[in-house]
Length: 354
Ligand SMILES: [Zn+2]
Image (cartoon, rainbow, N blue to C red; front, top):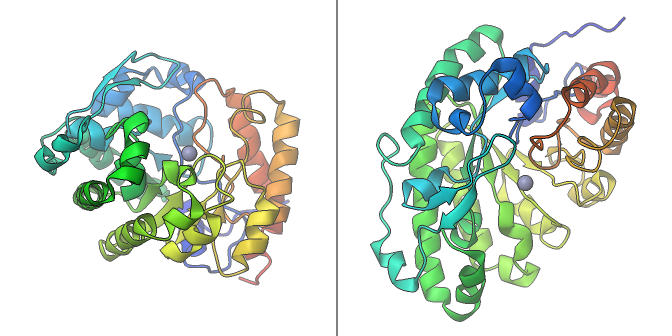
């Protein structure tokens, strides 16, 4: 029978350094708040979005109850925009909150936008407190602690900072104003990341959620420059940086490789085999089991098959393409962990001798 040689944090960090491992890590990089884990831990949304103790409790449940090899908080994408004045509504147990009012709703707002203080604004203080609670526990258990920061392009165009209806038009018609906003969004992310890292985060999932919405030719201009700058600064702060993208990323995927992040977290719309073929052997790729089609709707056996496919296709970190959906059955979360343990010796980096 197979036995682990490395601890979860050793294994995950080895992957971030492109070093050999005993098997693939099953690290939570995207959100892990599911209704089953809320029931099991007694920490439910929306309280677990807002209360540091409950946030820590629900985050910890992904490790303790589901067996994922790390802890990832928070569970939504609005920390930065809320700290800048965005308003959310429809906070529910089984769904993400919805944007009611963007932080920047006119071009004039861009000049008025101030860099938030992570110790004071929005829910950032609560997220920092949950990070501090979890950091010491993660270090005892030898598991990584992953926090998330929105990358400059995604924050400029979406994620509650702006409404997509306007931001896409501004991007085309008002490039100077958009560049001003993107500079501020870069700084907001860096200031926030620094506070998170000080509080004990060892990895930042740098969320470029909306990058796929930018035409590849446009991406080469402003987005590439600022996203790359952000990755560089977060690395200088001492964190591992995993760059995430949502939606159909095929068009801009080659550009993401130029960001120089430790890893790319690949959304489910792109086939792992295709991504590996484009990226070559020198890029770490995490992902990319389909969170809805497979993880919510299929059986544990199907989940295991999908995990085997991803491992054979060249994944370096076994995880969903995007966030775990709140309605994911616990049994399917556990199936992914099982697949990683039982089949993870076939992973690309495990085939290199330890
Ligand atoms: Zn995503």
